[in-house]
Length: 195
Image (cartoon, rainbow, N blue to C red; front, side):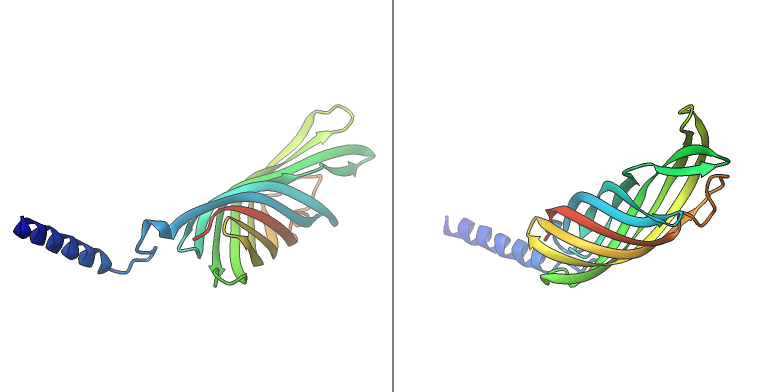
């Protein structure tokens, strides 16, 4: 009996030692190093010279509480009104795709980070007189940004970001190619499991 107990104790010690000597990895050594979050996104950007609001959401997998990769979706809260040759038109704009980022010193109460959104979307224009669709552009959106973030609770963060939006593929008589390009300011409310 004593010999069995000794062998069992020795095996437990060897296994524990082997687990503590695992090699370092890019993502981390423990399953707990992988977490995730989701949240509500607000973005403010000029379109055709006027400030507009886009709202949406996003979520991501978080590695080592620093690098994240996920997805997002944003759309205009109110349609963009334009006039051409005396006729009125209403345009919607939305995009979604990949969301990548990096938190700098995420364990600090206030910290910085960088992220980028790479997405596909569309600009759909309708005639206000007939409510018929008159044009649709498929676009690609690139929006890198820099943010400051506050750890409110272990499950909740708020960040404010500033960046620049570049929209490629605007080919319409209702908008110029640069009308959807410009500086952006955003606020994100993020809920999740932050290690």
